[in-house]
Length: 76
Image (cartoon, rainbow, N blue to C red; front, side, top):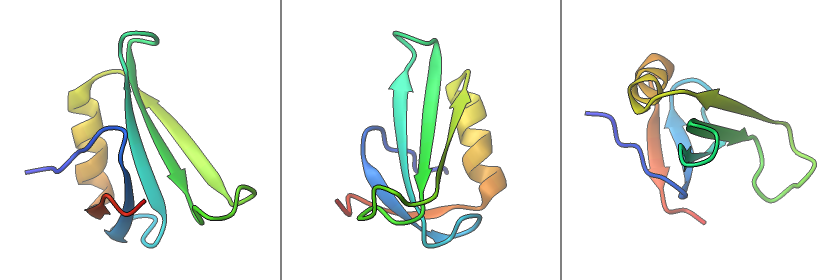
C-alpha cells in the first residue's frame, strides 16, 4: 500500500531522490490535478527542486510506486 499524505512535508528515506523532501498537494479544485514538490534541502530556499503536476490520484500512486519511495512524514 502506498502512503500518500497531502500538505505534509516528508523526507524520502528510500528510492529515487533519496534524502530529498517531498510534499503532495491536492489541487484538484483549481487545476484539476495534484502537485508533487521535491526539494533537495528544505532549509535552503535556493536549493535544487522540481515539481510535477499529475492529473489523477491513481497516477500519483503510480508515481510513488515507480519511484520506490519510502517516506518519513511529518518532519517539518
